[in-house]
Image 1 (cartoon, one colour):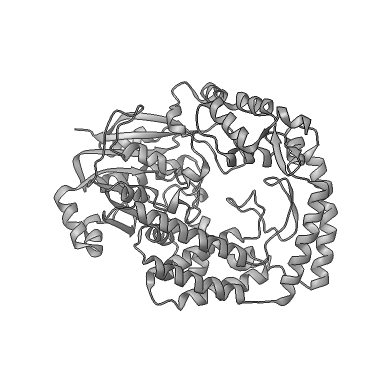
Image 2 (cartoon, helix red, strand yellow; image 1 turned 45 degrees about the vertical axis):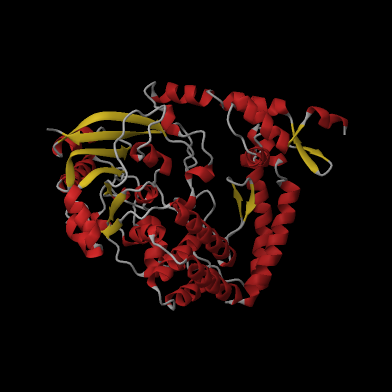
Length: 529
């Protein structure tokens, strides 16, 4: 075709962009821009073409301008090197770091930047070495511990949530990979073979076909996204009209197949947030997992199931991180720019996550070292760290007594932002773990008022005071915090420490719909004396 002479294939566009930006831009990066309407798609026979002018306009509006814009909003002291904006999502969610979703975690590259002992062009100081012991008293899903194990450091993670500790433990455990694959495949097969309700499969097949036809007609991709992003379509008005139009089709299908949805008045999380057929499949899958004899394989299958049921909650894609109301009808999806539907089976998601989990564990098995780690479900304000480590490993406790903990890298909870137990309510409900909401520091339900802030200062201070008893004299502590209320100078003073440096970093790729510029501070603390 004559017009394609001035256009580029995806492969050619990848090379062009890499040369233009002076860094590697993969073909999948270009495909993403096309798929999400960032640049216009040009058809040419069996190939897709893009205009280099479109690419240049996109990168010119983004390249460099983002840093300038963010610094204008957040201040010139913003450390852009700590944005890691050159990384792709698959880099920031590498290997076991994406074994299970966890709201509020930091990316592994941030940990690596501060605890890696290799000097680079941005960082001249070396804080930790191989063989050191590093502590995370708010370990969450274990990012610090995973990175420590990869870099040859011993690590200790403490968290009040039993479920968080299980997520971390499954990332760090040593598996016989053949046995792991066998156990995972057995559970995959029994779930595929299980049929709670024959009507549901027929209903969903017809619904899928009707949704696909409707979206192809009214929300063609990527053309619709391209037009919506440029304001050529009134997305608000158009989406409401089409959502109502398809809802009639959906309601008719529900009646035709006599589909049971859920118990809206149920207090039980699983009954409220899952469509009836999914609820049955969850119970069946968990019963099969409980039959596994070896505890560590049982735990990793439970984590796969938990990851699955998180994705299968009856909610919109936009509200997956923060639930609002159960969504049991079709709806216009602001994330995917088309009509989406609730899920009626866990089978596809379990299968996908099972394969993904095994692959991630295989990758990490080649990277991790023989360093020791200990995961402790306890309150960091009062826990006896040496006693708890000794329960788990005599050799590790001997190392700990001899050289003490070299330092801390952690992200304490932010005051009044997240209820850490509630974000995994589905798992607590299914697995029967004891919830300890009442001893969370800075939970959402306490708000951000004066009383909540005072309680937060007291809680974080007590954690630091307790932990410093186990630290080497010349310790280094790094706290990742969003300190909009300026609480950390008070916390540090009460803990008998001093702030020796602050690193202000932009937080990119947030999951919330609010994408406005946002930063956090990494406080570097040392002994006051």
